[in-house]
Amino acid sequence: MDSITAAAFAASADAEPATPSFTAREYATVRVPARHEQLHRDTYSAFGWTVEAWDGPAASIVPRTTTSTLTLTRDRALRGRQALGELQRQAEGALRRIDALERSRSARATAVAVALGLVGAAFLAGSVFLLDDGPSFVSIGLGVNGLALWALAWPAHRLTAARRAAQVAPLLDRQYDAVYDACERAAALTR
Image 1 (cartoon, rainbow, N blue to C red):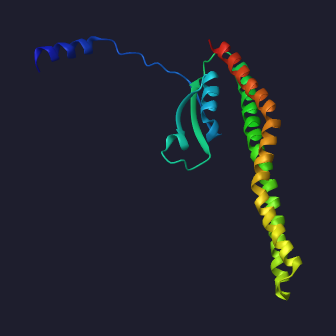
Image 2: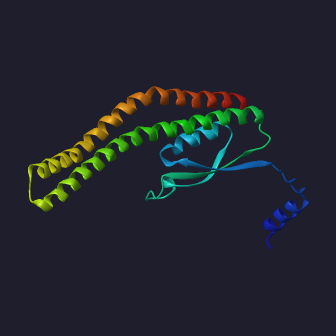
């Protein structure tokens, strides 16, 4: 051993051992919609949580799922944990309502388009069954109506989605405001 290494070893042996510091932590795992992953990350960070790991479309090159799993940790000695828990529940409720409102925009439009498609398919089936007796005006009329309903499904979907989006927009704004308000109040508690 050279003299520099020996001196460093002797100095480290004389030093008192560092007292281990312990921090009690709490852990949570949350599944969130992938399209709102960043909103959930920001919301949970306002409540003192740190994202330790995540599994979802943002973590991979090719999106495989529509949900992400966030693994969260935070210090248990956080001031105002009881009030933070209540604010967090309020924010999580608003986040769930945001997801439900956004899904309702496309769900209603999809239901209208599927209904038109099924009625159109019924008309086409009736047209095909009437073809057994030979082509007739009723058969042709049913076939044209069935194809017209199929053609109307896409514009009806777009129109219904646009109407529902206009209805849902103010409700979504209220829910986003509720999330932001809870986050601001939580951030004030954790300072």
